[in-house]
Length: 171
Image (cartoon, rainbow, N blue to C red; front, side, top):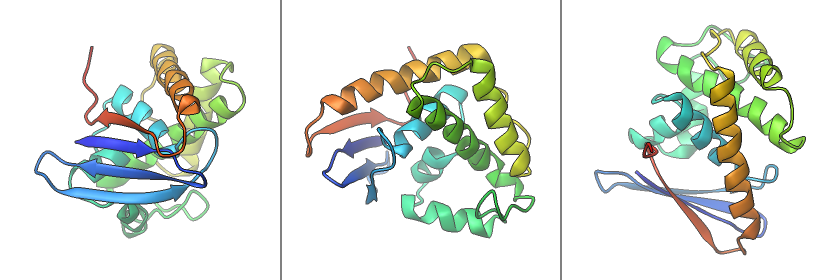
């Protein structure tokens, strides 16, 4: 799937074209220094999550449907957590890990890798899902992806885009 993230003034845009030729697009407000969905891309591609946000979109779901899928799976938010449907556990794990990396990035990206893992694990526990295996080497690789993307993103003018492939090609 080809993913294009276009920088906007107040909102950014996602355009996806799947291997079968189907397309989806959505706009989303700024939430921090880089798009939240890029952090999903970095986390899910590094950890091999094929049932997180991007896996769901790649399988045919519209990005705006994912929240409704979460509700149907028994998990609309960490505050209202229930034991989720088994096929949605990875998506919840991804969201909790993404939140930990966003907090790290927003605070300068120099925190202790063990702290990121602990934050992600605590989020998973609160969400009633098992912690996803993630070691310090994976934390370092995800941080590098986020940092590299942030530099590219800051350099873009509104209307310019970044193109990605899902699944991410491996070196």
